[in-house]
Image (cartoon, rainbow, N blue to C red):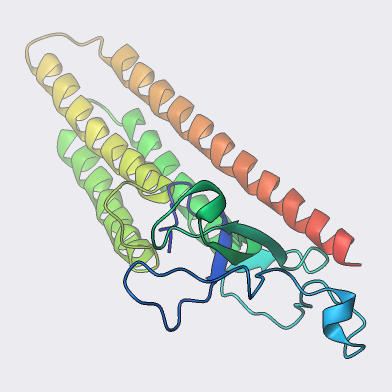
Length: 242
């Protein structure tokens, strides 16, 4: 099966696919004899009155953790080429592909992770209001917040898929954590400048605070824009089901 990409987690959407084909009693290089047995979707004649819905399947009680799907649309069926055995074009084998489109429910992260993360970084930014000579207090408070974010990162990582690339949620957590480390480095710079007689370091603190606030605001706006888009799609699914 095709591996699902979760780059946009927790605002990702997928098509779950199941392929059905006849592979029994094949010799090496053998093919299904479509001249004798035709592969296709059931019709009214095939049902022989046993069902009033000859095409497809009703899906109403499927439960996929942290996922939403459109009950009105349900499963979709199609005949697709099967990459098995020799031949191509007209001689290529086919299979029945069943597909279900799903959307992830990001509510846990929308209400429990991102607001806390934003407030922690806002508090860290406010620490730049302390005097440049108070480097120890500034650094200590910022690193304490960083340790809290490390704990959050470990908790969130336990819920994230294990993949070889960076997920959107991991990127956001990394950016916020690196921002805290940059504030510590900025505190060292203004402290050293103050020691060597450069007293007008307030503008450096102000520039660092504005840069961090801008980054936080942009990242939060992008995150919740994606969250609203997914919520609209879920609402459209619910309306279509009714």
